[in-house]
Amino acid sequence: MDTASAPPLIGLPACRRLIENGFPVHWVGEKYLAAATGGAGGIPLIIPALGARGADPAWIAQTVARLDGLLLTGSPSNVEPHHYGKDPFEGDMSDPDRDATTLPLIREAVKSGLPLLAICRGIQELNVALGGTLHQKVHELEGRIDHRSDKTVPHEQRYALRHSVSLREGGIVSALAGGATAVMVNSLHGQAIERPADRLTVEAVAEDGTIEAVSIEGASAFAVGVQWHAEWLYDDDPLSAALLRAFGDSARARAARRNGAEPGSVATAAE
Image (cartoon, rainbow, N blue to C red; front, side, top):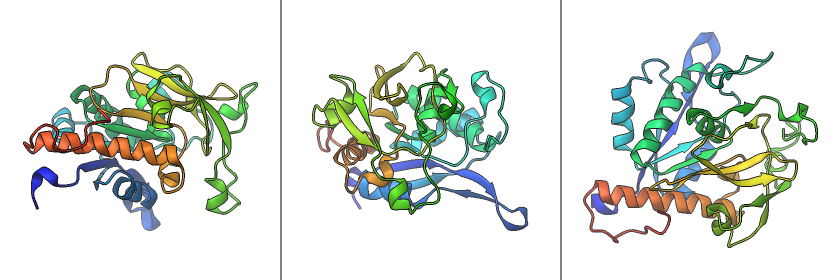
């Protein structure tokens, strides 16, 4: 295959879990792998959650240098609160090995201009990595709705469009939505951005004030985070499809540069 036209290599950080008999596994949900291929047109590469080993600066830099895009996935786990200066709460499901890998990985990706799409836990990781803070239990805040899903219903109902979000006029998410000022999204999260990191621009807000999408100010490539699950909706929802497509276009542009293609030989509209 001509490397100049090869699909972009998209990294997806894994979660680390213990299965039967205490054996650790590193996993990424199939829906994210499907979105990376069918939505972004890339080749997915699972990045293991290696903890302190994965946080080695040389390992992180070499990983980013080999990638064309970074897709930060959702997860049942939450970013450990000590990373943003808060105490843990009872019942928190954490994944310290993922945190140790993803937080420095995000900072290096942003530094190098690696195209990035962050989903659910991913937008929270992005915010924390760049210096922001999180609400640990949005449903306990006065005036907020319960953004968690009903886990007793089928997946199609859990991931269905549920509430509207207002989009920043002239922003990147609004542009991907065809200039719309509001769209419907799904909602399956307990945590959310509290104080956005300085480099982040708020792109979407729910009716109750919950931040639903951000972009990285001054980024040289596509760099967007969404609180909703665009990976589930990209086949049917125009905005989610546009998010994955723009991310993939930006990753293809990086792949072409990395492989020495002539400028303009791939789509660069997302950059």
